[in-house]
Amino acid sequence: MSEIEIPEDHPRYQSLLTRHRIEEGVNRGITSKQGLIAEGRGEAFDYLLGERTIESADAAERAAAAQLLLADHPVLSVNGNVAALVAPEIVDLAEAVDADIEINLFNRTAERMEAIAAHLRDHGAENVKGLTADGRIPNLSHERAKVDADGIGAADVVLVPLEDGDRAEALGEMGKTEIVIDLNPLSRSAQVAAIPIVDNIIRAIPNITDHARELRTADHDQLAEIVAAFDPEAALAAAEAAIREGELA
Ligand code: PTJ
Image 1 (tube, rainbow, N blue to C red):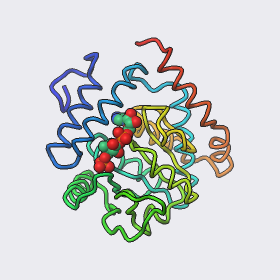
Image 2 (cartoon, protein in one colour; image 1 turned 60 degrees about the vertical axis):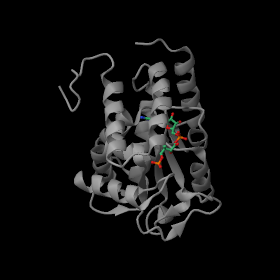
Image 3 (cartoon, protein in one colour; image 1 turned 45 degrees about the horizontal axis):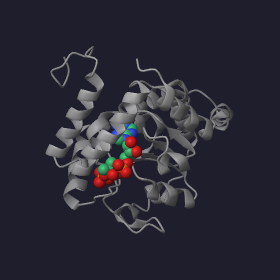
Image 4 (cartoon, rainbow, N blue to C red; image 1 turned 135 degrees about the vertical axis):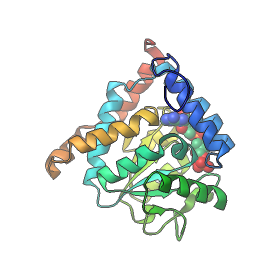
């Protein structure tokens, strides 16, 4: 048994655990109600993928680990769904690749910002960014434009999980390298990412961390080679094919 009273070998275990975490997130003021809908959309894609990390996603997660290790200033962006689903795993990844963690919300309120920061700190995050909001992403009208000047504002590589395409596009225009996690390979954020990861975030984040720990002793050229060998279009095409044609486990 785990945090939900369902055995881990239950066929719907992952989906039930995810729903439980999102519901808890809403109850605790971390996740927005829209986050419930976003989760439902993601779940449908995950079901069609067979709720597993396909080979092309694992390759993307390895390339993401290499890219984060190569970065001068990597930042992991966290919204209400990410905080509810993988707070301890995000803190672990930040430690493995020496990244900042920054909260960035679509439905930004002071209460949710504080609740998410407290939740991340409870899981060991030391310096949570996003609350200062003294920087702006140009050409973006909504709340997501608000960033910390010394966080996402100064980042060279940004991990952008579970969000719409506007900010992903605007960050790209700022010259930042983006790693996107999104179960929908057709979403605009996945389409504009240097490294799109089509996988459930609950599997993707720990797997990036495992790759990062394994690559810790790799030198600059080896890491750069892994990134250069990754083909984003091929990864998106493989994910779309798996969703359209894949056999369910
Ligand atoms: O906390 P906030 O205010 O910043 O709001 C966060 C949400 C997620 C509500 C907001 O960013 C939003 O509305 O996002 P979208 O446009 O629904 O996009 C979310 C994307 O994430 C969709 O393409 C989903 O398929 C995907 N997704 C949902 N759950 C998962 C997922 N991808 C990976 N893992 C998941 N568990």
